Length: 512
Image 1 (cartoon, helix red, strand yellow):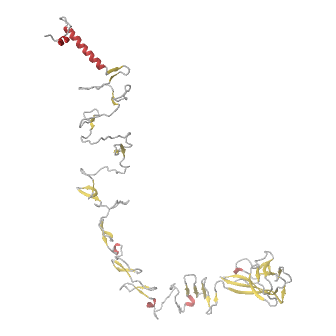
Image 2 (image 1 turned 90 degrees about the vertical axis):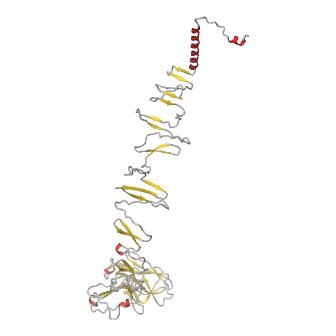
Image 3 (image 1 turned 30 degrees about the vertical axis):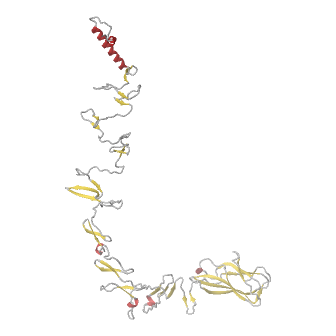
């Protein structure tokens, strides 16, 4: 039975004997050329750049060598950086297997490498700083997102520990909840530990002084004082003894007097009453308070001799009687009674004078003051107008009423006084009259007014203080009748019914 399908595929080409090998060779060569054409469609040679460009994924099962620079993932017209053999132009470089190492050999058989841990649970990337460190000795620090930067430990306050002595292992500094922070010192096989309390209630600062020396050690008790009990050792004592610079007592009587109780302590007396004095017991007991009356009795007098200056101080407003019976009092003794407020009295036996303070005076039993400050003492009174019958003004104008006085008419004032001048005028008037002292060269002194007496038949005496020309110099240097400006008294009555009987110039010494 004939098979039509078999006939369909049956070759109608009859190869002549002797040409079959040539035909097979021709067919194989055609297949290779077709494969080369297919491969050349994704890889070509760029004549302009001198590069072989490959645009498909190639798997190399052997060794791939690039004898010039190699760019991965760059643009078609991109050139490699100068001095760079391998450039990854885009995306990341991945070492995907476990325990892979990125190696840097430095041209030796050894290398420095970086590799990632095999238990990574998150993606971690570090960004390196863009510059060199600013100085030697700086270290890398990182932020919480992996940004690295250079850090100077000293400037950052981390200290500069260059050595830890003979600590060959473990930590020189330890910190824990129970033990606190400790600093260990090692020397001659022994250790010294500097630590803080296991539990601190707040931040503490311990400042060492700017001085060389040895720190003292000891334990204390609240309310006790510290002292040196041995070399470099402190002891405590509740009441620091006198031999250690203390008082040896816990308290003292308020307002009492401190005295030596024994070699180790001080004591205080009881509080005395007002104005008592402290007296000694002759070394048999503590000092005691006593009144003056307990010390001075009749016949127990105060005996003084030689040139001793004695001051007796009394309390304010005392009842005090001083009797001086020494036979030498009138010749060599000076008695001074000083009150402390400027009202002093001094009895000087050498001159026989009683000297009073600036605010002092002698007063009689009836109250008359002798020598009181501002007291005016009449020294002299000189008439400058006087007639048997009164003078009556005939006009209401100003007229000279007294005689002209050419020289100062009275003696100088006494020491310790100043001079006051007054006019004593006996007159009668219906209206007010104005009076003044006038001079020949300096004009008129301050005028003064006298009130009306409402009668012209009898005279009324009135005294008025006024200035008159006086000699130059101090009061005590005046010379009687020394030359002065000529002067006189004038009057300005309001009407012609003024009667003037007498005018006197009175000179007073005012006690300073």
